[in-house]
Image (cartoon, rainbow, N blue to C red):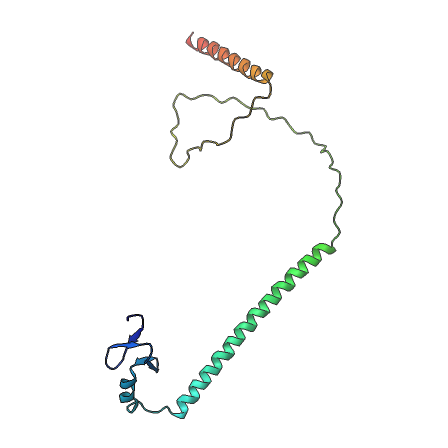
Length: 168
């Protein structure tokens, strides 16, 4: 039963069913209530009717202008796209030139060893380094791995020698 009810009557404040509703001046009425009020509602003047017609006409024209504006914008965008495509196609494609080797020789970078300080630096929370998610490379040959282990061993020996010198 509540599905059939549309709203509340302005006069009697009771629910109005969909089958017998009367809608006037943006308000909802029962047919009996509307007959009672109809006599008290003044008839519309010619000036109000004319104003309403003008308002409706202006609304229609405004809607038409909005549509025309959108169409003009679309045309302008399409013409720009077409112009850019035609200018790209009309240009000659440059042939690949051979790269010249630079005459300047690049200096080799020499890395300087940093001195180790006794105090450790504290890292702030904003400057923490993120752990890399990069995978370790797969061993290509045993010779490379042997070289690496040899280098590590040499470094260990040289560190031990330095520590021994410091102690003396």
